[in-house]
Length: 331
Image (cartoon, rainbow, N blue to C red; front, side, top):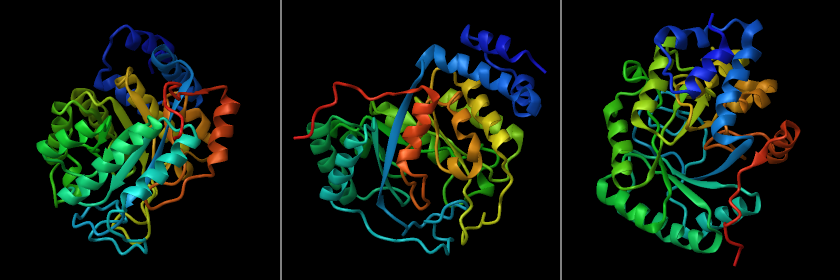
């Protein structure tokens, strides 16, 4: 096994992990886990100190999706008993932003189900974003599906700072997860938002019967895509989805995955995203020694832990909320 602290120093100096080193991270013996996380923390601290970025989701459109993604409760193949509704109105999006501001959330994430947005849905988001930026100064991340260049340009003009479109898994494993769109469709959308001048956010879901080499390939692909923000989700298998009953993760392996993403993408925002509470469980705080970002509150169709517990966790860790002081007061 490598010397984890020495490997971290090499990463900070510009070293890119070999496949052998990457696999060693995922195979790290449990008795060396704290050393591995110390190395990940040394990298994280170099670029982000002890600050943690907070993000909050509004599920702006739920269900009604024609895609057949095996992990998703909102997909056409899901029988999960979720709420379904069309795009909420502008006022609802603004109320969500007001709550995010009150909670000292740095990035407000507007997420809508579906293959891609209609022009009417883009109109609603654009109108809301303009007012949110004027009133609260929050950073805005939109996640609306596959995007056309002209739609990306409109979002950029409105003030959208970041666009999320996850690769979800490796290119090799992607056909096992969905067949209604391709891995390359997802990559094209990431490239589209980059060309529009929007910061790209793209991440993965761990625990969908992928191999360790798939996990390594995901981390490398996101490095090649130059995603500024990388949400790492851990599968929360919902009853009624094709992947229901899949439960192959344990908290220690989840920590090793987070460490791998930090070692391979040392300068990027790495977010512990969906499934954090049910997969990391009591080891959630350790995850922030590799990651520097979390979601606060509920996810799209599953509940997060109480917001107060997240803030207490950050306080107990001695970490600082990364909330730009230049963000405006409510008016």
